[in-house]
Amino acid sequence: MLYSKSVTMVKFGTIKTKGMGLSNLQVNCYSGHIYAERPKSFLWQGKEYEVEQVERAWQEPGERHFQVRTGDNKFFRLCYNEKGKQWSLIGLVRS
Image 1 (cartoon, rainbow, N blue to C red):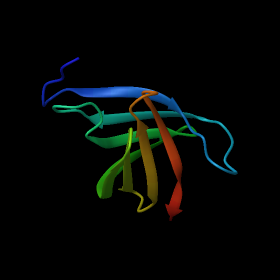
Image 2 (spheres, helix red, strand yellow):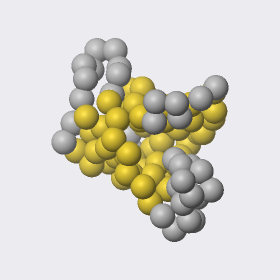
Image 3 (cartoon, helix red, strand yellow):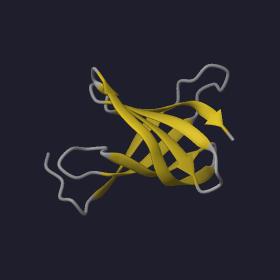
Image 4 (cartoon, rainbow, N blue to C red):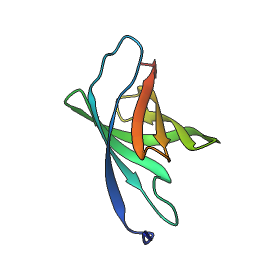
């Protein structure tokens, strides 16, 4: 599937984190030549977080990882699993 530079896609996933249980995660991301180039915002535990800045981004086999800073100055790690086509929230890094 091809996405133009201006297309924003929403992908649903499940959070799989230690101590946080299972919750719904909805990620709004920028998708240019590939899906999930960078997250723009996410909805987690009934609260929407706007991504102010992607502090760090890296790839591992089959996964794209992002450490992001939100508008309320919290830091999260998000991961997109390419094979499972799911987002997960690795955890709150610091607040």
